[in-house]
Length: 289
Image 1 (cartoon, rainbow, N blue to C red):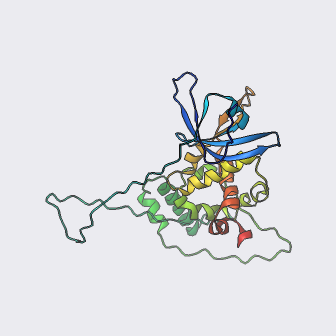
Image 2 (cartoon, helix red, strand yellow):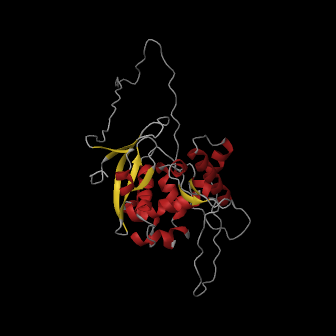
Image 3 (cartoon, rainbow, N blue to C red):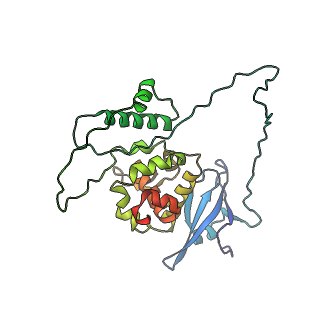
């Protein structure tokens, strides 16, 4: 057994038993005591960025696990230089056609609860705004008809005066299609929060008061939020990079599979409630306002 104390920040290499798949390098992210019997080590794979949990005694007794005492994480910053000629009318010897940058406007969607089935001009405009936002989030250009309807000027529908009923419960919205958030990046956080803040989901007990299953799942939540904040990955791309152990309903075997989009949005919401900034929390949860 190796006489090594495993701690956060260490670099370990898992040797391939056959040599065909190649060695894997891991960084120790967290170390947790497991029921005062053994120690649970949470590692991050450098190639796939996926988390991995191992028991400390398994690593120390396995010769294929090698501690790299002199290794460390090195961050490389690439600087890209461009020339600003400072002249609006500057042209090179071979003038190039300037590509017009597409300006994508963020559309805030209130998702109103409709009391009647009949659609008003306001309803049609809001539906067009929703379609434009969804199309833009996928990196595509909305149709001319959708743009025209979203930018149309309509008279607001006449407000109906309803009698006040004592102890009447407030109507709460709920999400119908969770795949709506598939392509959302952190740049779309305002729309994401605006859609969810008045739904039953944000008051879910598991999100606001529920504990993490263990230290590994706590790290999984924190990692998901940090990857989303990076701005390079959509919610669905992060979801696919965080598979968890699930029981196959047909074979009964334990498999590594990503959770559904509904559960992953709950994972992001719980991460924001625990680790988010005050601005992020205020945007989603009334208790922080």
